[in-house]
Length: 87
Image (cartoon, rainbow, N blue to C red):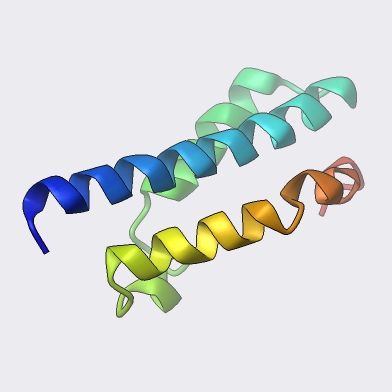
C-alpha cells in the first residue's frame, strides 16, 4: 500500500477516535469530572502501543479503519450513557 494511502487511512481512523473521545469527554464533564485530565488519559491510551492495541497489531490499517468506522456507524453515540456510568 502506498505511503500516502496509509497516512490517509491513519488520519481518518484517528479522527474517528477523536470524535469518540469528545463524546466521552462531554459525558465526563457533565458528570463534574476534569475534562482536561480525561483528555490526556484517553489520548495517552490511544498513543500507547501496549496491551490496549495488542489485538490490532496483526491488522493492516485498512482493517483498523473498517472496524472503527463500522462501530461508529452502529451508534457509538448511543453508548454515551455507559460512559456516564463509569464504564
